[in-house]
Image 1 (cartoon, rainbow, N blue to C red):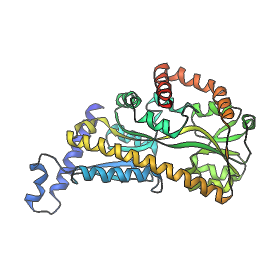
Image 2: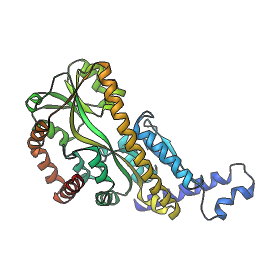
Image 3: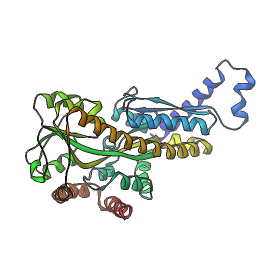
Image 4: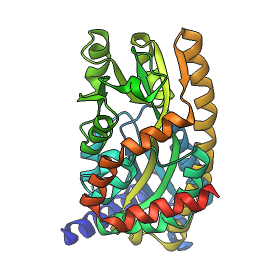
Length: 346
């Protein structure tokens, strides 16, 4: 497996250099990058997201910054909308070294890195601001080790917004969750969370959600404002309830062997560009959060802010889901995250 990844890297580098030399430019121009000690290289970055999202716009900024910092010698080509495969296929390709980089949330990565289930602990982050401080602080080094062990290099992990609950049932108190038929991902921790607070979780493929809401198969679903609005979920829902239960964390990961095989200058350029792009993505997601809430309200959807007492009841009721995660992945990473959240909240 290791040999195959290294071979893929060598072949990719040879292909890039060959293409650079065969571009029709005069010989002295084609050899100029080599003379300066840095090769012309190109990396693919695949995502399943669309061009309208904050995630994609942040990746565009990242690619621009990388090209700028390397004088155009290292370029990143973006392939959104599952052009290189869906989430799982992208992860497999990245792990094998067939795709250099992948942008996606942590949810589909749990099957490859089980400890990422720590982010499925609902109602742990008190705010976007705290989540950003945690993910750009020392905890990032802790979670990076988990990616390293699976053959990935964690380039970025940035919070965008909370997942909220849209529903045709009015929810204003903890008791109102009782019996709520809610669509979830096929994630055992998410399902246990909703069961813990009295709801009836129903896993469905995302492609089936709009029709399921329209036909009354489920009453509710949960996602960011951006996802709710851009996918027209609000057309089938009367309410959006700010449950703030799961933070959407956007990651950029890279095949570890490919990253370590890059010139040190390119590694630095990627790292520095991503820090700047993360701030851009975080700020943009915050702006879009406010605008999408207004769009939902203008359409006629009522947005309900739950009182802190209800949030506390939800956290207390969710303990079985927390225990399930601790049992599956161990106490160490869970305690590190909770400690980081406490420190960032002070």
